[in-house]
Length: 204
Ligand code: GAR
Image 1 (spheres, protein in one colour):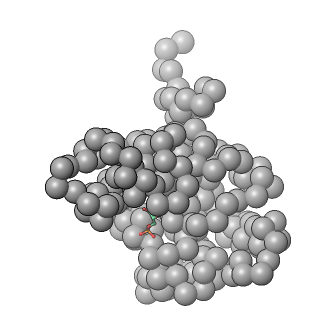
Image 2 (tube, rainbow, N blue to C red; image 1 turned 45 degrees about the vertical axis):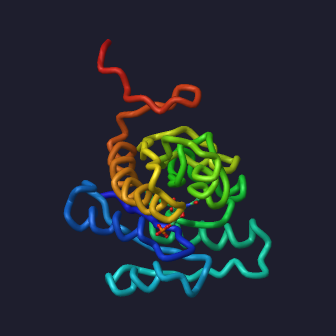
Image 3 (cartoon, rainbow, N blue to C red; image 1 turned 45 degrees about the horizontal axis):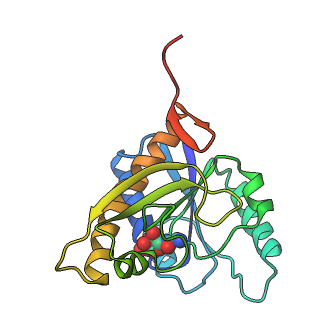
């Protein structure tokens, strides 16, 4: 049984999808050991409490990045976490944090990276006029929205779309993609060659 941690800052719909898939066994052999938010009033924390999960608010307000990260990492260690899932965690991790958990931190981003990193990626894609948008689950490295890509899902942009309808359809795919990526990573049958996440060859 592997221990997952969820880090979030907001409503937590990706967290809820992960929690559902853990409960149903679609994410295999894993439990959510702890949910942590840097925002004490995050909706996702409340949901975690309602689900009976350990939910911690570790406020980042007025703290140096690394000081806050040290508090978060202490909580992750206390809960013996194997895989950390950033789910709408709107904070950059310090290089020190990233180095504590090599290939053990995932993030979801609502664009087909490397297009549209940063904030409001769906709006950026819509305004740019792309015909294919989507989402990416990737390992976290020291750069923003940058680590090796585990899974991407494409979402066509319709002529009738606005930013909101597009973001909603991307979110549906995020909820599917994140659990698939968690299973792939937990199975430990991958290797990262350069930037490429690939399944280990079974040929000898
Ligand atoms: C999601 O769309 C996620 O991809 C995005 O924040 C939203 C959180 O929603 N993350 C980023 O933009 C990270 N750069 P949720 O709280 O309902 O999961």
